[in-house]
Length: 484
Image (cartoon, rainbow, N blue to C red; front, side):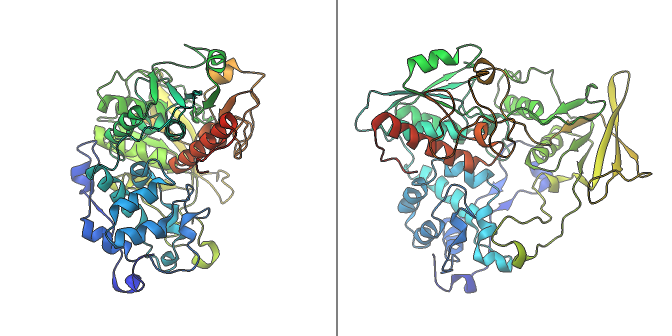
C-alpha cells in the first residue's frame, strides 16, 4: 500500500495523450509521461484495502505484487520497485503499455470509479529502470549443459527463454519472421508500443546467453523432429493466428481482408522491412483515401481503426454485433471482475463511427471489387430483424472477430496425428497441454501461451511462459528454483 490516507487526499491522475489531430499524423507512441513526483503521488493512493484483489487471480493475470511496488514508489525506492515487479513480470514495459489493466477494474477504489493508476505506475517503473541502468544482462553463474529450443518469440517464448537462460540452460529461440517479438512486434501497432522496447529486451537476453534464429519456420524450413532430436526439451509458443472464419458472403472480393495481414504489413512498413510476411503474403493494403469498414468490436478491430486513420482514410466505421453497453456498470453485481461497459479506445476516439447491434450480412462489389457492406439490425439474441437492412459504402473492409488457434501449417501439420489438439476456450483448435506442467502429447514437447489457451492478453502469455520454464527446468534438473 502507499499512504494510509492518500486515496482521500489525492485525485486520480493518469498520463495524458497528444491531441488526436496531432497523433494521427504519425505512428509513434503518443502518451505524455508523468514526472516521478506525480507518479509517486499516484502510488500513494494505494489504500490499506485488506484483500488486494488487484494482484490476482481476479485482477492481474501475471500476479504482480501491486500494493508492494506501489508502496516502494511512494517512498521513492524505484530500484526495489523494479526488482519486485521483475519478480513476477519479465517485461513490465510491455504490459504497462498494452495491457487493458484488469487490475484497475479489481481495485477497491474502482467501487467509486477512481481506481489507483496501476498501469501508469507500472509503465513508469519500467521506463525508470532503463534510465537508471537496472535493465541489463544478468547472465547465469553456472551452465547446466542442457539445451532448450523455443518455437516462437512472442511474449510467452521470450519470457520462457529468459527464465531458462537465467537458470543456466543453453536456450535457442526459432522465429518465423525476420525479427523477434511475434505478434507483439507485428500485430500491435507502434502507436501502442514502439518496437525499440522489444529490441532492448532482445539485446538483454542475448547478453544472458539466449540465441535467436530468425527467418526459420519450424515445420517448414526445419522439421520439429530435428529440434526434438537436438535439444533436451522444446517449447512451442507459436501463438493463435488463424483468423476466425466469418462466413460472410462476398469475403473473396478485392478490398476485403482479415485484420492481421493489414496490421502486419503496416508494422513492417514502419520498421523499414519488406512488407511481405511469411504467414500473410498479400499485396499491399493501404487505406489512404478509402472508405473503411471494420467488422468486430475488440482490440484488433481498434488497431485497424487507428492504422487506417493514420494512413489517411476518408471515413472509418466500426460494426459491432453486440448491443451498446451501459456507460457505467453495476458495481455490486460485477466488481472485482472485468465489467461490460462502454469503453472507448484511443483509436476509436480519433474519429471512428461506431455502430452497435448490427450484423454484417454480405460484402457487395462490382467487377470483383468491394463497394459496400450490407448490414441489418439484430435483436438481443443477435438474430436479424426483418426490414432493417442497409448498405454502408466501403472501399476496404477488415474482418477482426478473433482467432481460432495456431496456423495449421508448420508444427501442427508436421505433428498431425501425434499432437493432441483441443483445450482452452476454443477446444477444437488449440494445442492440448495443461497449465501445471505444460506438456503436450509429444515427448519432450511443451506448449504455452496463446497456442495452448487461445487468444489472450500479453500478461497471460508472459505468465504461461514463466510457468512452462519452471516445468521444463524441473524436468531437466529434478528440481527448480524458478518461481511459478
